[in-house]
Length: 378
Image: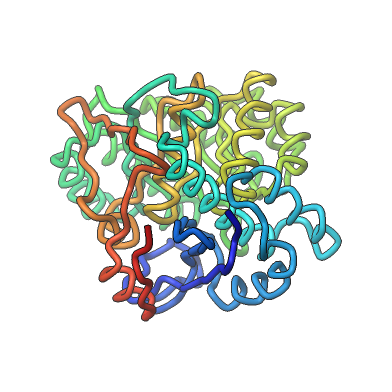
């Protein structure tokens, strides 16, 4: 079997808010779908956390390297792509694009062998996992109403992030967290994401430590991105001093970037994004490294249905990964998948055990959000 073509199409017409200071609009493209075609009619799908124009440019650079390659060898092929392009800049658009290709190759391998990707990664430790609803922060009243509506959908874990938090007063920060805890109830997990990778983040280490102490009073499970994303030394110091767990890592790419953060225990919880770091092949190596250094691996999932599907397979194959991020209210999560997602009475999400990633894309919905018609192949 050989790779004959790779096509990309940007997701638009429904892009959810990101919470950024320069807010994205519904027609902006921040996620791009990848389709890998083969000479035997099997197609694999992946997802890239990058604008479609940048992905198209990256595919042009990568095309001589992947054309004619064996799609049943995802780890080797992806490493070939990385090794031959690292001098253009490790991370960024090319690495993100390789992430989508790698996800698609694992999907092809699973479909050809008749196995779920999690089993191909070494075995399934679990057949369901707890999804946490991931939403943007609002003023206390609207936030409370939103959380109550999501709780009614059977979610039992919630993360609130970005918005006004850390950008106004400390009093407002606490009011937001208090309202969230009251809405989700004492039995639910509650996480807080400051979003310090936002442009021109205004806070520092002392703010982060004071805020962590406040969050502990509301039994917050983890405090995410409380510091500028490159400030390794402050993260190490904060993790040692904070009464709540510290999480981060969504902006890092490739395992080499994660190494010092994990070896120095900058995080309690590391959150690589499979649509950025290099795909499934790279993310499982990061997960192994995290486990070896006593750090919990819980994927970042503010992306698409294909990212969620990959995270579910990674969670099944990771000994200690018992949660995945679920971006609520996004058509790129809920609408482009045939049959959708179902959360059970325990607030858990089943991990598909069918071949590949275990999902099928709704190609009509894909066309609606990309303007491109992909034909379903074997």
